[in-house]
Image (cartoon, rainbow, N blue to C red; front, side, top):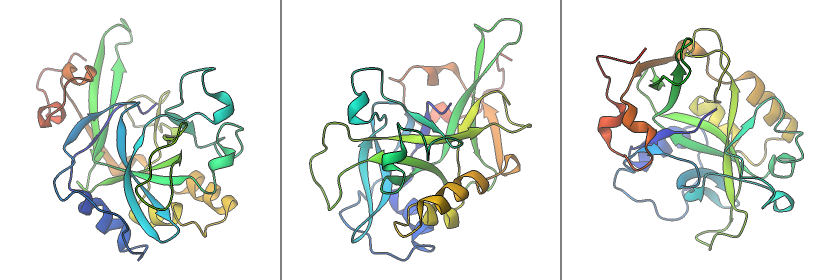
Length: 237
């Protein structure tokens, strides 16, 4: 699953990559300062990119979603499986209108010691190119500008199965799209069945990524800073 990631660049560094593929005006205001988050966790507000009726918007939305009928019955979901999201009763109502992108710089995974599962080594995963990432997401959010969030607003990160060569082939990873496919994903004109095909077939392959061990401090949600993504020389595993 994807439970922690980094989103630290200036918003325009992400937006420029998408704008080249989907030339729509940017609506609303964007903070010119770096986002500066190195340990984004569920239930926090996250900068989410989506297409509105009049252009592109990048706004804070809570990470975690449950349809109104399911609220209070179990904790909000933070991930959705790419294989079933389009048809799942949990997500199908937002599949067409709630497609969004989470701009990111990398995400964290924990690898367990086969002999002692209590021992876990965190790793930070990035693109080999050093470019920003674009996680496919689904959500419920306000449209038309800076409106107050409603009860039930939120989003999930779509995940795919980890391929051979990743840290743990039994785990899930974010569905990372190229800028071209990220722009198509959030295009409101893209039919639902084509969006499903895109998600199933066009995630970046394992060869696009690299990773390194990082300190256990990332496991504490109160910790946040660039030191969290730094390589450590003596990993636990």
